[in-house]
Image 1 (cartoon, each protein chain N blue to C red):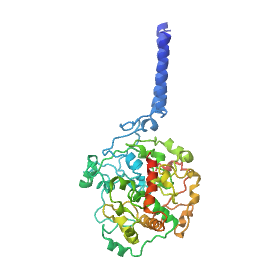
Image 2 (cartoon, rainbow over the protein chains, first blue to last red):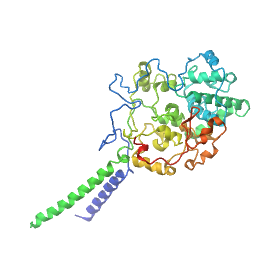
Image 3 (tube, rainbow over the protein chains, first blue to last red):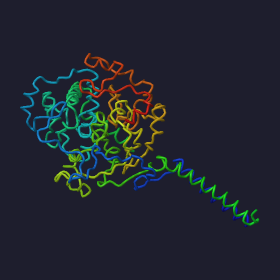
Length: 217
Length: 251
């Protein structure tokens, strides 16, 4: 065997060895659509239903069943008023916001507001969030700082969050009752800040626009 | 005893066989580890949903869709009504959303394919980790740049324990995009680092020094045994070392 062949074979062996060691140590990996290899399945898949899982027993294959009609939740209650039924809500929640206005509650309100409201209403409440800019045209009705929205009672804001309004969906299933009241506190604070001249709608949206474009780069 | 030829063949086959067996055993032993078999699992989903678009560009927080993760062991896959909250107006005719509309109108469940799967004898509680202010990215990777979600971490027992023992090396602190509640307000300029951690030193408890304690109603915040909720608000816990006893996860 000539020296050239020896070198070629040596290099090949080295490449194969490096690749094998790289794969086995987890340093080299690639995407795959195939389910992970199960060499020893142990008891990885046991015979029970998992949340949001599959159950062939039922016709629609859903492991999670709808509650029997008339079932009530153990904690709290489902929101009783329909979209647009503001009068009943205002009568029912006439006492206003049951949560004390503390830093902790407002921090929670900010957290939930940023999570659930900011896609459309923007972080400042100006109604020009990124989803609104992409898909919804009506910024004015989404502006929480407009005079009409400032006139809303706490109960009405709570009702709109819970049951929705116009194209806004109901959030009672995703935000707990306490959190919704915390959001009401935070919306109130945004509104009073805007009224106090801290952030006017236009300048707030402009600053956000510049940050956003920076983020997107 | 044997002829020289047979002797050579015997020696060679014993040596060669030993080498093949050793390499095979090594490949089997290391190749069965989760970071070899599981990382990079990227199934195509029935609906071509893009986290890159929804999180990366539209900045919809993780918890907008995966709501309930801070009170539940299971991080929920969003319901069809969550999708239709926007898509009843936006892209209402898109053929890519046909399955979602079918689900909405006829109640047919969308069969999403599960990416992250633990063995059934292990319990992982999402709410506990979210309340300890561990960012989603710590385990799920950079979701905001993935068009199709892939498994990013091995999810093996060694990997779990490594983080329970040395959280300061592994945990990514809270990022505003995750929607994790830290107990305090975000800094004024949080929008500039929507995709960056806001507390670089979370495990040492620096973030918690600024925590507000004002109302007696939230006095439980100060107690040694954290209550799961305060007046219905899920309670952020002190981040710290995770348990290492078997029954913490295998119960």
